[in-house]
Length: 396
Image (cartoon, rainbow, N blue to C red):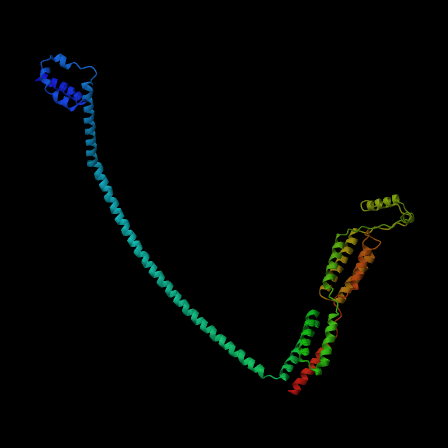
């Protein structure tokens, strides 16, 4: 039995080799196994040269078996553990999807409710607004109708007015304008406004174009010509000029000027540039060190406080003149300017200041300035228009 079992694999190997050539050799290889049984066991176990090893074939089959076992084990493990987990995840995902769908349905229902509520609210608001707009439009239309009726009634009344009534109204208006012109001229001191009122009154008289109003038109023309020839007011310019003079006086520094000897006077009149330079240096030096030879009797020095007081008095007079100019007080303005001129004349020859002549000339020019122009004593148009108004009243 053992020999037959051992011989059987060898016969199988020869059979496999024979199948590579023809299918008929495979059939003939089977009866040849019987005579091979008589060969010794050592000859049967000896491998033939050029054939694969029997052990390597066994290993290959074992590897195949192990691989198949591993595949079976993996399939069993997957079926046992992974598949239930996958099924569970699918179940959970389905449950979550159902929950999400339920939530979406609820939100959609809530959104529909809110949309309906908003639509209802908007619709009610629009309806209320339309009602209010209709009511307001109705009120405005009613008001417009009332105004239109009032205008029509006024137009009807104006249409019924005759020419005499229109002329009466224009005469009254011209008289009132002339009275307002007088107020603007003498009370408010505004000749431009008075001129505008007189021109407007003249336009009313011209519109009537009545030869009986010739005297009134002539009086209006005369008054307008007088006001147009008035010079402009000098209050602003005079106030600014006085402010500039006050600044100049405030910045001046006055020192006592000593009397010169006869020789110095001769040098002043007939001096060269060198003597003039020496004299200027001496004048500058006198402001710090008062040392000088004199041929005249010695005179006592005046304290610096005296010149400071005179300077403050001059500034005060200039300030008073400026205030008088701004308040249109011609008398006070002139008096302040004259007092300032007196102080400057007192200071001349006593202090070292070369601007006194220019200051005096500017003050004299300001004193001759008229702050406000000379207004006419009366407006002749006022009397003529008053006469016309009285004639209209008597005629009515």
